[in-house]
Image (cartoon, rainbow, N blue to C red; front, side, top):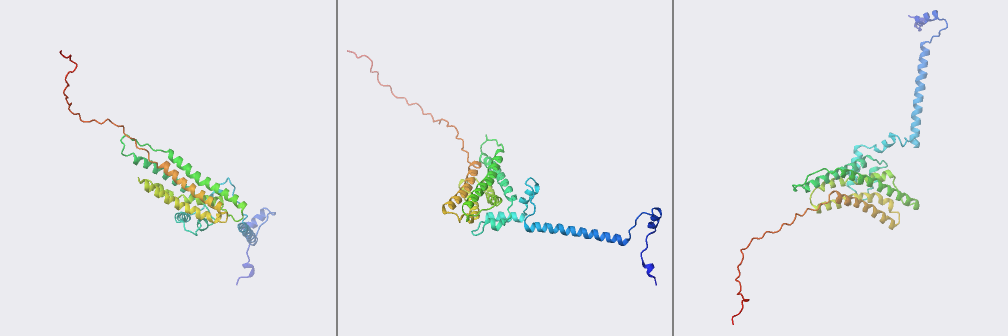
Length: 309
């Protein structure tokens, strides 16, 4: 049976040679190395736990450092949505139901700019393209007509759409903040939530602008009225809970302004991009009548001859 001395760890021969060459050199045993490794692992584990606890504390207390305004991470949060959320919000803008607030039931304190940005871009594109196609179809029977794309309509449609989707919500948000300072009962959404509501409410105008290609004036105005009523209902149902506690006159005036501006946008786009150009009246040609044969009338007797006496 092996003795206790044989079971002990022995130093390697390299360590003995090292001591023979340099007596002042120091060596470490396996146990010392294991102790150092254990200390390093435990220290790293404690640092990791400390960092995780710090992050959790910052998240729970709501004091986590926000990214700077000039960084990409600051704007990345505004586009942090998935396809399911965007489709659900589009569906909510197409099916406004009484009692279902768009902000509370669809945004849920997580507004985005991804949907409004691409909705406005798509609307500007469909307005310009549909306008060009409508103009070409209207003049297809004129042999003297030469089609040339009107690219300036893309710029005009983009300016109108984006200005409406940003300036009108900005004015409404400022008004609600002012009314909130005067009356404690008036609520207000954040500016991003207001922009999000207006952006998604414009989605119904995209299929409407495509259907305006149908050359029927009564159908075009009927589609405009339906789209304006549908998208206007989204805005009214979204802002009614904030305004109903205000005075009756202020509430009605605000809702009337919201709906009027929304209808004015639709009417303006209809009249500018899909206006019916007056048809050119051809010049009047003189009518050629059939020539009738001349009628010979008998000459009267010459009464100017002198009378004989």
